[in-house]
Image 1 (cartoon, rainbow, N blue to C red):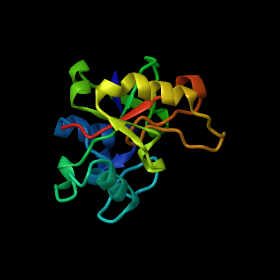
Image 2 (image 1 turned 120 degrees about the vertical axis):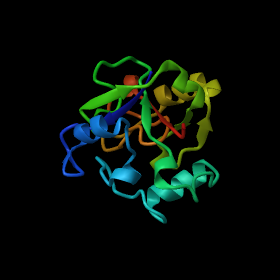
Image 3 (image 1 turned 120 degrees about the horizontal axis):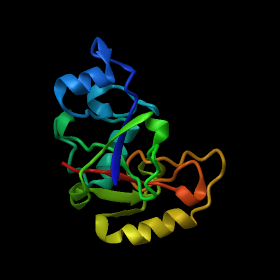
Length: 163
């Protein structure tokens, strides 16, 4: 299951994130909201912009913000709290067929992911995540691809690049 984490009570557009979602009827990415649990680097020339460009071969470089990738987590262990709780206390579960439009990678995109694929390589990416060794200070989170979690046997796979 792919999930999109968010902080429902964080301020956005004169209300809260959940208010905006209810009013607008959709989930917005960091690049359109300017809200992040991590670094605010999603702008032209920023770190996130650069690694998106590298991982996705520049496909979104000239696209409007609303058409850039949306980031989520592959919650392969069906954790009831989601696999990316660092990125929000709440999450949306996407329809199962979303997996057919998703791109996965490992390790985390912000950590120079080297393995990028569609669902055809999920078994290999899961194995890589399970076998990865991480220090306690590593940020093994989903951001853009098949990146880790906070505890080894439950390493989540991040997801990016669907539309």
